[in-house]
Length: 196
Image 1: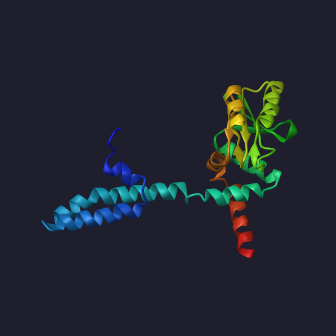
Image 2: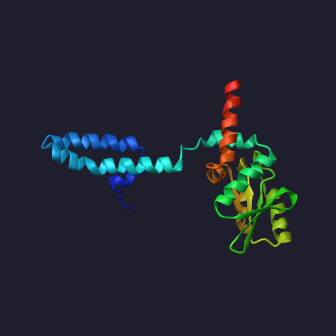
Image 3: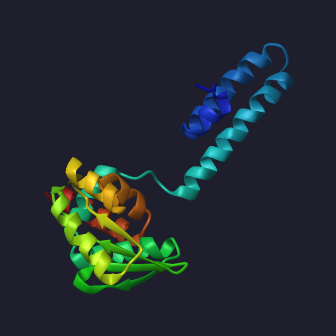
């Protein structure tokens, strides 16, 4: 296993940890000279600024369980809007397909997205067989099945053999987490939890 540098480790940590390391390095270096302490601490201050900038750029960290719960409470129209926004951010042209599916197009390739049962606790191979049939009927190139619940091992094997992508809870949150629709759903969910 390759050794990682201290800086690569600090980039994955909160920004304030780099500031703390900088203060410790400064204190050690200042025993010899304040200039040496400042020079030794400067790279750590740079890492703290970089990590802070990354966090500002990405926005606040996602509350995965909270967002999953909020997504399960959305209406089909809200979920369609959230997925549409997420895929448009990835530069797909999004259209509504038959049976409430979404059809994505980019670079001449068509992808069918099925999200009708995103609230289901678990997804089995039967739902994926339906998607495989729709994929062939519409002559699409790819298919994505979206669920906020668990996916059975049989469903995973079927998706792999059929060349379909599965977006389960964690992947769904990663896809839609930064959309305005997901933020609204999370905000509404936290307000309802506060009232209860």
